[in-house]
Image 1 (spheres, rainbow, N blue to C red):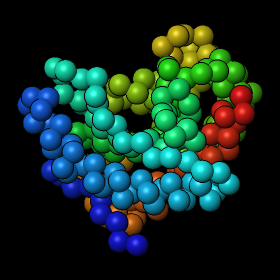
Image 2: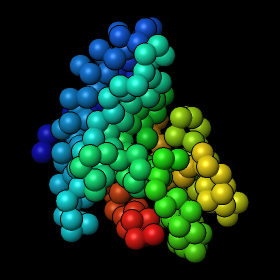
Image 3: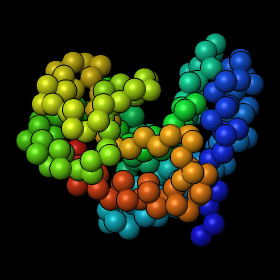
Length: 204
């Protein structure tokens, strides 16, 4: 396996002005890497989950004016889409790479999933100490896992636009992001920790 990681110019894509130019750069610089890395992750997740999963690469098709501030790949058990389902993500903002188990606002059965996570709050808190949580996939910021409180999960349950993403942030300056094999190793390790919660969300 010889996978290509992400370099400075990939992150600098998000400094390019204009929707068309930025999309061209996303398509030429980043998406081929997403395809290769995504196929490796699909194989890993399929064998660890015991069922088929599918790769989706963000197209940003609804955008007509504002260029995207980030881009990502998603992996879901559904061949047609991922936003309505719990899914795994890897993506880039201009200053970091994110690795998520993502439950976003379009989710079906959001309340049941939130209840399931609340019931397993202790197990969530026992995930690796460098894990972070996002409550809005559109924003860069996250909170450290040790700052996660039940009220965050209650908000995810009760607020229509509430979201819950958990995983890791890796700085664009971290040498691991440019080493494809090491990066994919870290992503797989992150996903392996999150598989029980993914399965929990699916069953909810």
